[in-house]
Length: 317
Image (cartoon, rainbow, N blue to C red; front, side):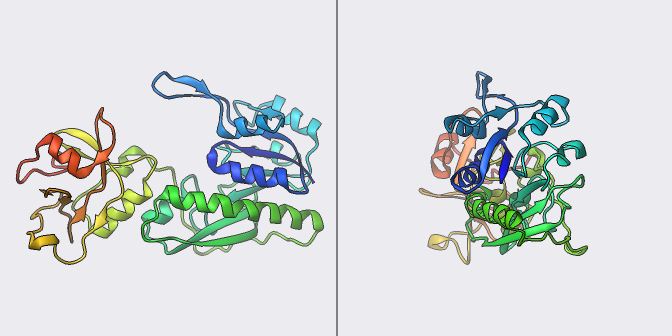
């Protein structure tokens, strides 16, 4: 089939590469406009744009898919189908109607679970043991269209959302190509999503990533892993924010028979480790990044700030 691919971040690149290597013809790519990045706020093209141009594929960067110019460009390109992976903007019905096989979206959950912008983060934070990816026919609703195919993926105990998303992006690329093959061959039919098992996965905001130390250790572990690498879990220490990388829930007693921290957020520092109290068992901190500093091991951070007995994370709220 002749296709126009829509996608923006790194997670869309495995699908773009798989489509280029497939029997289908990638006539053009639609991606989000260049955006400011880094301290200098330099305008940077999307990863998908960079990869498409490296292959010599024409790239369209509309401010919005509602632009008449984009829709006319799509009509001129006359694609049979528009595969989509993490494009980052809602596609209006007028654009959805242009390709005869519609727009087929690769979504990183087992629909109807985790509809929305952050399905992988929510799956990790909820403690899901299995998740996956789905291909479905895009329609005006939020991830509500009929499903063509699914793949499953085990959520590992130490997975961050970044780890899991990488695996899903690679496995999902094969699912997307297989879906387009089935559509072209007439062997695949989209099935309506069930009315039960619906859950929503809105974007994780910075405030959502704040660690609340009065929660159980398991919940804190899931929150931190779900928010890694973005937006990054955080707490406060002496009134300033500190970002926290994945941590370890302590099972049983602390090494050397040390007494566990007495209060949620209370810090216990040893020569090579830093522990924090929770509602349940303590957690061992991993990487810490203080405001304006580079990321470092928790023990190195603790030596630098000279933590006093009884000091706590998050004590200012």
